[in-house]
Image: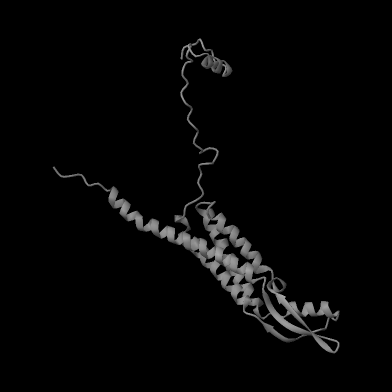
Amino acid sequence: MSAVPVPQPRARAASAPDSAGSRRSLGAGLLLGAAGATVVLLASGQTWAEGRAAVGGGTLPLSADGQDVTGLPAALAVVGLAALVAVFAVRRGGRVVVAGLLALSGLGAGLSAYAGASDSEALDEKAAQTTGDASAGIEALSHTAWPYVTAVGGLLILLAGLLALRYGSRWPAMSGRYDREGAPRPRRAPRTAPDPGRPEDLWKALDRGEDPTREA
């Protein structure tokens, strides 16, 4: 008589690498998305461009930060953070859509930051406001590395979105145990007939609207 094969250990061994890979991709996606959004928000508040505006017989130093140049990277970083959280709140097709939004927000943040790396309009506007001369220009214009740092942050968000698109179907979703229909109902302890020898049991039964003289 041949022994019946037991498939359980084999199935567990096959699913273990997949589970480990899902955890790694999940951790990498969360780390990349959160780090990228943080970098974008911090770097977009730094000085991106510097220059001098001619005022009378001298010059006035001016500077413009990332928010002066373009507010798009910071706004898209916030969208990316919201999408990163929403990935775990949706399932199936909705998760693909949210993961795509996460990737697009990172791509948009990176491209807009890169485009603003050589911008001079923000300083021109500041020069016109400061001097009161709409034709005032900027001399000795220079740019810092912060726009490129912001672009790198956008790239990190993009990578998080690509990971969510590739492996998001294996990631866990928010627990549904608090859903109205799927919530487990607490079990009620079985009621026992009140003991006639204990007056407090009789009073408790009366408070519950039960007839203490009735047998269970």
